[in-house]
Length: 457
Image (tube, rainbow, N blue to C red; front, side, top):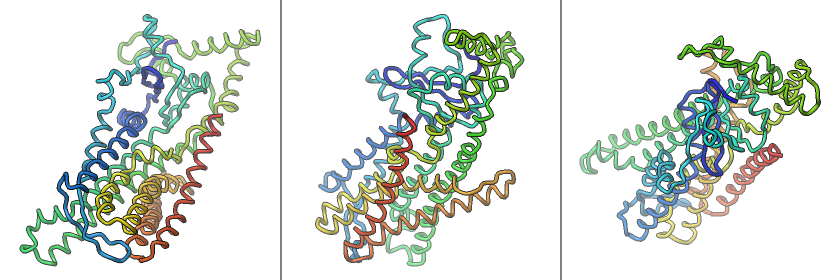
């Protein structure tokens, strides 16, 4: 069956899924979503590998490194400080953008099928390549208003991955704002020397002023790009998800949007006549009804399809769409704190003993608690409570209010990780706080995982 102006889709060779996207969504959102799904994990693995390699080379003096002060257990240590984080960032950006091109050199890259251009009806080989058993649907609020999209999903509901299209920009906003703040903190001394000159040339007030400015810049990078923008996007996603149950409950095959009917069966560009997709779907449903039951009653057939949407598709979609719960592995792939903690490796090798253990524990908590907790806290707080978008002032106020709440939660987590390591002398305090942070983190993500498993049944 041919589709006019339907949802765009990507066809991926081999065992990869056919990736379907809503036609009403911005192309940049689709591109970011595909980067997130297909490239982010590879980018994270290679970035961490590069950071570890650079850190080890610095630890054994193969690469030059600087000296820096580190506060551990109330004592100041003068230790190595290197370029592992920066190298990890460069590797992450390179792989995130070019991973499929790299795979193409090995003949393994994903070929792309755009079903917005319609399935080839003449070439059987191309037609077969365009129809696979697995789908990745990038959901936007207009998806289930469209007749073809709903019909295809209701006809399958098997081996389908359903993810909101606004998750990717929210996660990448967090990713790159955190990278920016990390780079500002790491290279603050270098930047200060560049602008203020050597130690002899600059005064204490100049240094203090510059440190305050760099601190404010890092905070703004995190708060504006890493909290406020993702909060706005997450609120938009949460509002759409609130409307989704009613959207599916009130679905009518007779009233759903259809490209051909919306343009009065005349193609807007070529001015050629468009056959009616709605009538084509009606005939197909009637044929199925006749094959299985022997009935040729069209009204009953259409009512049965609407009933299937409400009773079968609706609970399936609500289980699978995830909402504010992003998989733990995807959060690890997007949040850069694991790369930034690789700078601890030369220090741990140099110090050894309890200080090295405390730095390692700090790195683990930042990577596996604070990192995933950033996006999770922002999305859950954004989705919580009431919302109001009909007035610009109220909309902005709620975004600032919820982003402030997210900032406070994340500041508490960050302080709980860093203060015991930096100030408290006994390592037991750090272990106790670590346990307090790890237990709820495991509980939250196990709950999300169990929902996903339950949704796949």
